[in-house]
Length: 103
Image (cartoon, rainbow, N blue to C red; front, side):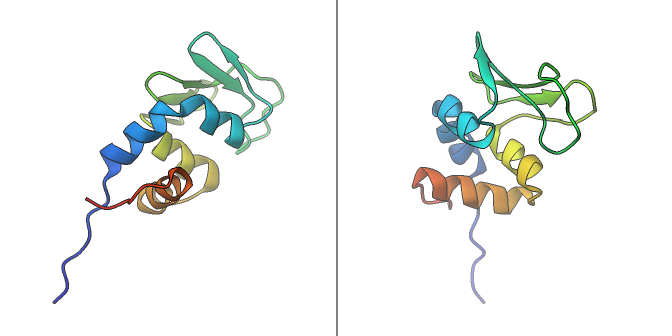
């Protein structure tokens, strides 16, 4: 029986948070920085004007204030934007950052 590898979600989210502006500017290139937030159009819906979709660059938390969509880190943002399960999003973010994704 093989041991199941545990994904290091907290470590991946922390490393992503340290590079938050670089990451969100890549994922949401039409956005802009306002203070500690990245303001962008939400690409998952017919968003016509920036303002309701925000990512906190210090904490990684994000929300679309026009809907109930929100999350606590950039891994959950990746899952949301790219329609991935959390585990797949964590693996992709870790790969993007050059991290070993496992505990």
